[in-house]
Image (cartoon, rainbow over all chains, first blue to last red; front, side):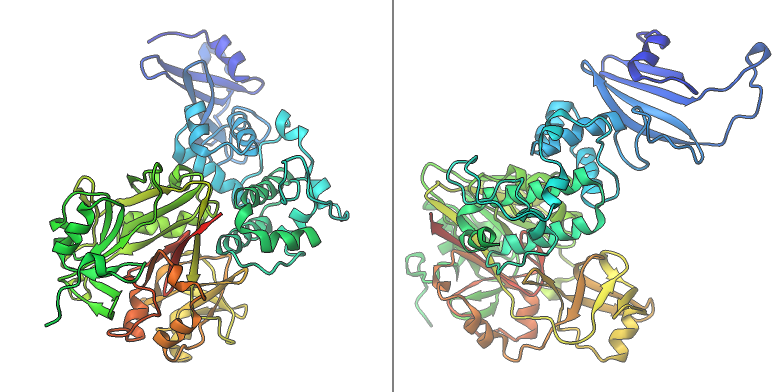
Length: 251
Length: 341
């Protein structure tokens, strides 16, 4: 087995404070490194614990890869501990650490297809889809701790939520009749304030899905992602949505 | 005896019933096809660009018919230089079916009934990446009801001859920019004016539900209120009426089973009765119904509305164990049209 200096591993994973790396296993053939992390145990003479170790639960998350090596972190979490601020931990039941989830979320925001995300980051489609499902259903918050550059450059949800007068169709996308993604009309449509006479089946289903998701999503970044999804639907299907777009423009 | 109908005399654009020999001539003549028939007949067809699923129930050119001897063939619209592709998907891979779909075109899907792929698609399709962005249509392959418990539904890849009872088979059909696919449904069922029903859990069966906000056992509710379970539950999806059909009631377990999942974030009502489905359907079809290129309908409509020998306007197609217009539907006609941009 190839060795890594544990101090270096702590630095790479940003494991600090009351946490320690208990063990690791690096398999270069599989390009995979498994790391076991747990609460630091104060030890006395001859390395014996000074007190009984806390009751823990074991959780596993995939972490950001270093080079071609994928990292899987097996964390012993003391019952009731709050790990939400630790980049190398994740949400219970989710496949990724917060650090990795943040990178995946940035790609969602950019509208990148799931298979492309998987290919680019070496992730399984099942895991990415599970994370996306949890976001869409309000089961987890977006990983916006360090706001992704691309997301930060985009309009904030408050802008879309503000009760401003609707803007005319943007010219940014050429001749499109689809209002710009920043237009408040998307939030008014998504939250049901703006009612359309809809003829197209896919829009009826899409709108129902988005409205249902927004009912349970409180995270602003994820709500904005849903509005972008709706906008993307209109851009993609613009030529069959003439009846609906004329109402959007008037709305 | 009538003279055999030849492939060239087929009238409905949505396809027609024919002998295996006629179907063989058709698929060998080039083009791309959707085929529905009993498994044994599908296996007798030659290799060609076709996607097939098992079912013996149809509305053919002469009306509703149950047959183990004929094959239903639809010529699929496609464009020169834009060759369709066939691909198998297991239950996990199916989540990427919409992202794999052509940027402009449509995707035809056949899933064998009772398979894990069927169950997973029913529950998960609305959450698929790019769902609703590109036309996804299809049907659930079935068997003759007399064969329940003896045979299993299958799908078959006409290009390779592979037969499968577990995976979904998909034909991705790209279209040129001058055309686009329009997918729609014709559902005669509307929400009745009765109780508002919500389920505490999503799934293919239910024990408890909230009726007008009050928690009750659903099986008992159906019994006490003498609900006709041939009428589906209907949900209003922003104006689209989406059915969930009753499969049965297990009185011992006080459980109700469905042919599609109910969702816990959706409000349902029992449908209003439709007195004469065949006639009502013909009247409800859009003015350009004859322009429809592909269609399917539900075996429950066939059985409950006694469509044997009856026509459904100019539209023909297999009567299936479930219909797909983006997501799984019940008791609904699905139609595909190709329009000029």
